[in-house]
Image 1 (spheres, rainbow, N blue to C red):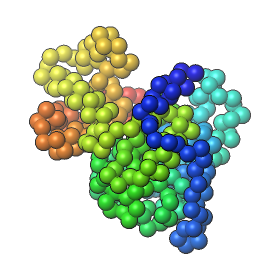
Image 2 (cartoon, one colour):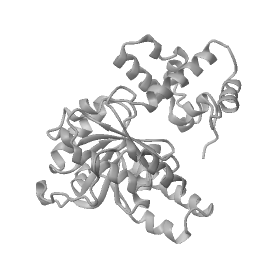
Image 3 (cartoon, rainbow, N blue to C red):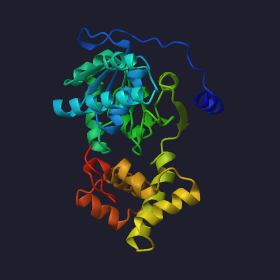
Image 4 (cartoon, rainbow, N blue to C red):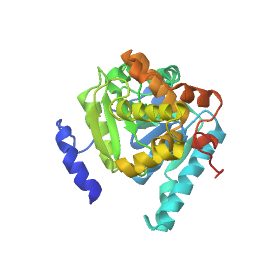
Length: 318
């Protein structure tokens, strides 16, 4: 009920008409048939596996693709573990776990994207890597397939420029952890069509998410506001104003944040935080976005946060 109320609240942000049902051209390259019930997620890390999970829970068949079979299996195990936890907490019937998991398929070949009506890229937050993926997808997919990026800061217009169908390219920025967080920032590039936007909004709502449109500027809204706050918290630690526990405690108790900024940075990944700050600094040319030297030092040392076991805090292996 809470999610439904929030969705209704934000419908005023989505003024364009939404189709009741999506239809797609099924004439694709190589005789491959695109299916309206199939999604591919590229990247099976924390974000990608979360996106794959919510897609499978919504009834989509999902290809999980990554650079190695080992990474794919880790991602699929992450989804399986999360589904089991949800069932154990009473958030879903135990019998649903197997049914949802069976909608996931490991994909060692990007060619499988030809079967998907929606491809969601969730690779590392680096423009050159994402561009290469979108170039390959452009050759593999037909003219109706939607190419979405889960980028948290990079230009959708620039990503779209390497394809021959920029009207089909859009941003779908999910929040971490994906199964829990309701928001999806929807970012239209300069050439993104109304049909692509409407289809993505409908897909996000099917995932039980609240899609909110923002314009294509560095960091969009979420990270343009969040990352400078995290960066300032790192500066406070760097300058010795307070210990990490005190910084996080003040923001939790004084600002009613569920998690302190330094713990949140560890959850996001310090490398991701640094890359977003560098994107903001370069994109706006304003030194208020200058990454803290301590953040750079931690990333150089391989202290990336929870995913490596050590960032601002130390984490036990799970």
